[in-house]
Amino acid sequence: MTRLLSRIGKLLVVACAIFSFLVPVNSARPQRAEQIDWPRYQDMAVDLMQQYLRIDTSNPPGNELKAANFFKHLFDQYGIDNEIFEYKPGRANIIARLKGNGSKRPIILLSHMDVVTAEPASWEVDPFSGVIRNGYIYGRGALDMKNEGLLHLMTMILLKREGPPLARDVIFLGTADEEVNDEGSLWMIANKSDLFKNAEYLLTEGGDNLLENGEVKIVGVDVAEKAPFWLRLTATGLPGHGSRPVADSATNRLIRAMSRILDWETPLKLLPAVEKYFKDVAPLQSEPLRSQFANIRESLKDAAFAKSLTSQREYNFLLRNTISITMLSGSKQTNVIPNAATCNIDVRLLPGESPDEFLKALTAVIADPTIKIENVNRFKPPNSSSVDTELFSLIARRTKEQHPSAVITTKMLSGYTESQLYRQLGIIAYGWAPFYTTPEDDEGVHGNNERISVANIRQGTREFFEIVSDISR
Ligand SMILES: [Zn+2]
Image (cartoon, rainbow, N blue to C red):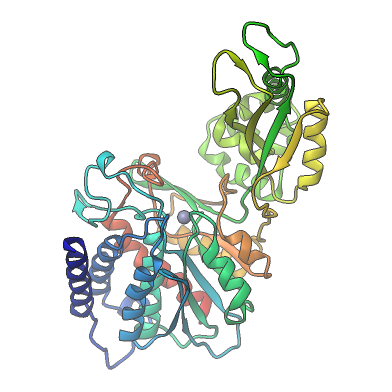
């Protein structure tokens, strides 16, 4: 009961704060970004970021309906068409739309509203406090990805109040359950894709930017991700007492198989986006790496170079299908030889790879027909988006103007994002947002003390708006 009352109290505070921050109507709509009263909108963005982080959408269980309602209040307030789809109790997606004249196809701003769970005891602050300390706003989702959802919201409001006439629809899409099963996006694509499937572009999470000594060094636009292809290996054999070893027991067979997997060096493959990445970041290296990166295709033919490059975690996954052995199980008792032993392996395939081909190769490596191999996840075929587009050029050009020290490149993600689902509809999907963080900041993603700097929110509000506004006019 107390908890319920405090929740209601919190909701009232949220609602009041929303109304207190409404920006008054300007009679003359500015057509140029310089005429916009940025400090006012930036204050609003920081305040709304704090409010959004206070909504607990830990998944499981999710409760994204609360976040959808937060957005709905604001969209209603600013006269932006929107609709919530509660596809099961408490789980909801929200879509909002600004209409263009239809001469260009829509752009989607996609963010998931759920966050991974947080362990409050390991945090310096309450993970759902949205508190500001030393220039940072703290909260689960501050980097993944309520920060981007907030920029999407601000861009919708800014376009509505201050933007140019639109040539294309700008669609805000907030989804549930990305962190667990993608139910939200899968439901939208299965049931409501008419609302967005003709889109030309989509922007979402996945970009990888590097801030070093206060300078933006790399802006990595995510144009491709690797695909998880999770496998379970099961070995079976004669059970028995641990005091009388069985040479080809289930555990022994499995360990031999795992050893062969560990020794297997999957072939190196250089995708165009990855080749571009190495060339782009070459100038940031010192010799001889600079020349080797600049000619990466040639350099990789040198076995010693290839070996040293792929011994580094941040480069290895870009160049091959990878395997991590993660779960192991055998007997529950030290003195019992089990009749079965299993291990799960987390395989990540490069875009364009065939899971069947991979399985064939793996089976040959294991070389033990008694070991059963099964796929244990819903395989999502890896895909990628071209960089040869108006949107990519615009992001590159504008970012360079704002941050002359930055190298703009394509960064393939080792992880997965929802871009994979939307690319299947023929939409060009990029992971990009104008947030510039250090590797230490990034440890907060799915970790403790997740936080985003106030400066990032303030500056990002303007940078993101300007790009979406430009591509949509
Ligand atoms: Zn995320």
